[in-house]
Image (cartoon, rainbow, N blue to C red; front, side, top):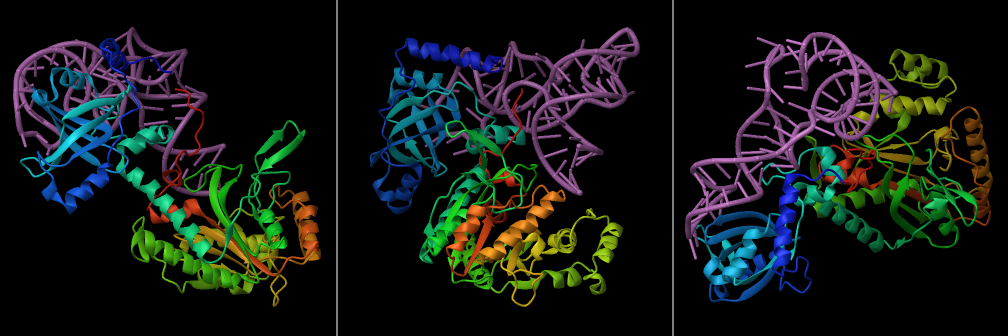
Length: 493
RNA sequence: GGGCCGUUAGCUCAACUGGUAGAGCAACUGACUCUUAAUCAGUAGGUCCCGGGUUCGACUCCCUGACGGCCCA
């Protein structure tokens, strides 16, 4: 607790005064008859029933502004739905209640009962016949006009951000609607929602550094999951043919405008589908969600228009390197030339990197930032795709795609390996990469291979980064704007 | 990890070349029974992020550190 400011001391003195007068600062017996939003609906529908002698309502909320004019006052207060003005008169409320009101502060929760009338300017206003304190605020709110701007304070004290900044509220309301819409989409398509372990003995399903933890009773190390993939596919083995999970993944890496150590993904698997079916499904899902949330298939993101209407470009990665990345097709097959090319273009590449990895790194730098409209890149090299099914036509590539929008990766999907021997060998390949110094290479998971040995139907699966998708639909430049409590260093001040 | 920028009253921000730290809102006292960022009169409020250095003198210049933002890796 920081040193108490004078403002808080003054409030505490007033609080003591209220207590001495027998006022309950935290009662819990005031029941609003409707929310402010509902009240405004009534105003829109049947204004004839309103007026000083009309219907009366119980409304509650937080006082956000007060205009005291001697023996009468206007207050503006808001609940979770909307805001409203109330008019308080000394002769109507009585001396006792009115002087109680005068001791209250902006930020306090209050309850008002009365009819609605229109002020001179036509604003519908609650005429207070009863007025009560519902909850006392000890600390002052930020300033009413400029609000709370300091990003550090907005993130650390998100509740203040939500009270003061309507835009912030709207982002998280939208986020909730997006997730609900996605859930509905999957359910309508016959997918079943499941929950798989967040704590795993082996952190598999992606290439990333995990967080470690310890289970006391079992005396064993556990990892926070970096992906749910290997568990979801066990469920497909078990006969759940269409499953999805919306939940957090944890990756022990840096923080940036696009990365938070914990982030939300939807991952889903469908038996008897291939990666092309999933591209179709993704287009359909994005188009329908964007339409539902934004009212149109096109959105504005950071000054550029992005159209989610179905029929997105699908470009093989190699082709994209030539056409978009400007790489000479003559050097594509030669690792040495690619390394030289990378060096000339200041792209950091380790000598140990295999051919497919070099291609992928070049892609990340040369192509990814240029993919503004929704674009599927297909045919990822086998070295960087340890869980993706080998392409029938080319054993160097996999039946895999990634989706890019606004220059960033949004989704990753592929036809799954269901040949246990192939999967085993892929893990061995990864183990070798690990030996060569790639600490993020996938770990051998024999139990998963064993599950495949019982037989998994042909399957395709995909993961979509929800935070990044929400960023697009809320025009947010940073992932912190769409995560309620983004990760920060310990507060020392 | 590197570069740039920031941190001053509860909040939003000023403070010139190094010379007693300011405003608006919020708060407090008073006036005011239709205000709309109400108005009017007055009052109070500061570890200038922490620590060190230079200087007669540091919010200001230098160094270390903390936290945050943006960009890069």
